[in-house]
Amino acid sequence: MKARKILSVVLLSCSFGFGLVAPVVPPVLASSNYQDGMQMMQAKQYARAVASFEQALRENPRDQNSYYCLGTCYYNMKDLNNAKSYYMSAIQISASSRTGIAAKQALKSLEQQAQKSGATPVRTISNTSSTQSRSGSTSTTNNTAANSTAGIGISKRVSREEEDLAKDIHTLPTDTRVRFHRRPESGGDHLYVEASVNNRPITVMFDTGAEMCSFGFNHLQQLGIPIPTGKPTGQSLGLGSSGPQATWTVYTTLRVGNIERKNFPISVQKNLGLDPLLGQSFFKAFHYTVEADSNPQTGAIHFTRNTGKQSGSIYKQREAGAEVPFSREGREMLVNATINGRSVPMYFDTGAAGVTLSKDLAKSIGVNVPEDADEGYDSGASGDSKSWTFPVRSVKLGPIEKTNFNIRVVEDLPMKRGLVGQTLFGDWRYTIDSTNNVIRFKR
Image (cartoon, rainbow, N blue to C red; front, side, top):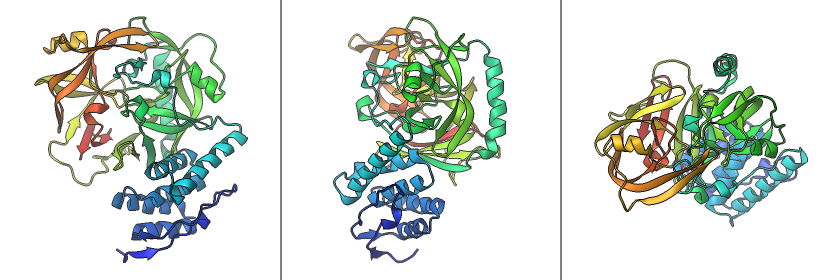
């Protein structure tokens, strides 16, 4: 390690090229990794600079200047989604500092640049009329775990997806990080990432419970993409009792961070009352680790491309009891959870706020709705369904066990499995290893 020293950092070399130059950052106690990052950035070796700044953040997760510099590196690497996310992280640490003000100016310039290019401005807040998740107490719900490929021509579509992935696999990055943020106004549970569809930015929910990447006509209109016509190509089920919803397949260029898929199919329904869903069809070629910052409202998803070799985990050491095996039902990840001592297969779903069971499934494992349970309705594109929220004695998944823990029981849940969501595992770091079919949890 190099000796630590006081370094007055000047970010004039971090200018954007479209008129924004960051102010001088006041003297800081700079780590060797931060110094290395500055040197690499000044030499325009941005990928190497990113690695150094990320290491600096591991040493000090509240290093605002490293967040700012990462945003600038990603801007120069033409990755505007990650640039925006890192600038937002810098602002969240201190909006009134010089670095915070510079980050706000950077975001404003990114917005102006997007408008000049004809793209839809980057969104920071979603439509709050659909604020809660599939497991939220007043949620607008599209159950993506049942986003089933039960429609017309599905086998052909899946076959085409596999062929396209085989063609794309060597163009995908072997190792990349994508910033995520949570939204307090939506319960603060879900992971949101910045994406682009046909080079137009949009915020999407990272959702392991979604088989496909799901959008609504409303999102296509926002993006300026023509609404599909003709016969539907599939169906999607949601909470409620109104039956399946027709879906259409639209081929796009979808990009998240440095991961880009061209001629990529997204599933579109007439109206999706929540943010678009980034599902398994997009990231199934990767292992991925969710790494929260010291402020759990932000963090990164670390993607490593699945080479098919043994292990594939980014962890150097495997901890006994920390692995949870999963199997697949279609594209869904099926794990064994334990509720009040009873084992029950459930879907591992980052797009679900909490633990959700159908009323029949709850009854089958001896969990009855108490008279004092909080009543609500889950409202979705396919109708409304009555629900109850109440605590159970314990819920366990691998090394995670929570007692006196709230679950949600939904009267009409159109799937045979329940959902394991963010309230159970969201405060853990976890890796999805799709070679060995295990989830590795780490504190």
